[in-house]
Length: 386
Image (tube, helix red, strand yellow):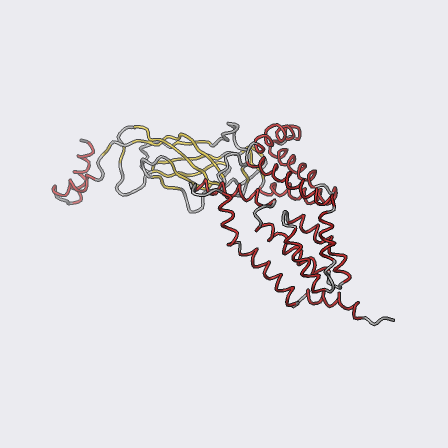
């Protein structure tokens, strides 16, 4: 009654008639409503990994869920959004302004970017009511894994393991040691303790990964690597190279033999590069084919061929990617291996590069730095004998 009397008095003062009082005041009448209350919040990266570490200076997706609690009668504004979600704490204001919340919505999203790193940081979600009828509510985000405030790492820290690998592997000539050391370093950075990182790597991380697709990939790689190693140690690959080298009479045939030998060693791009390069290098040097041209042929056939073959070290990893992608969209009509086979004809880069190398060998056309290298390799053969 108080609000109706206030509206009537206001309209009389403004000179409106009684007939219009119903239309105007109906939009501003006191109506039963409710107020939001936080029920949870998550901060995840683009790949939606719940176990991912949070980095500073990178936008993360903050998802906030809440429910509406009954409250005293509140004013319902016409055609307006009353509630606003904002951020506070060690985070930057969201670009584009705060997020408007429709009354009755169950959740909403807001971009979250932490401004500093090197410690436990806070991200506070705040919902305010423009009418002031509902109290301002706050929710402090906590890491679901630890129930503590999230620990922030600098975004550059993700480059440290890669740099360490590129340093250790050339120095030690041992890929397994370099990768293992980098994996331990990753767990050490996350745990911020070398011993805890060691235990976490061998006690939980590897155990969880090996139980999944990584275990399948590792078994496949070890079996295929054993077959390749047996071929190399038995002399089969060397014999294949020597047999192919017997047909090399000039630089033209040297290029073709290197090209087709790349098709024969298809199991792995690195194995292809090492075997083909080492087998034909001595012969191509005698035929005055430049090392640059040999490297071009070997490198541009190794990866494309491995990517096209239905049996290689590549397919083990690719099948897991196809399987995950199919599961994410609910595609169950074909297996991941059938999808891989279907994709072979559409691998345009691999087919283009193999065709380009083949016709480059047939036409013997070079330009730019390759032309200079080929001329340099041919000069000793053209020099007069003294």
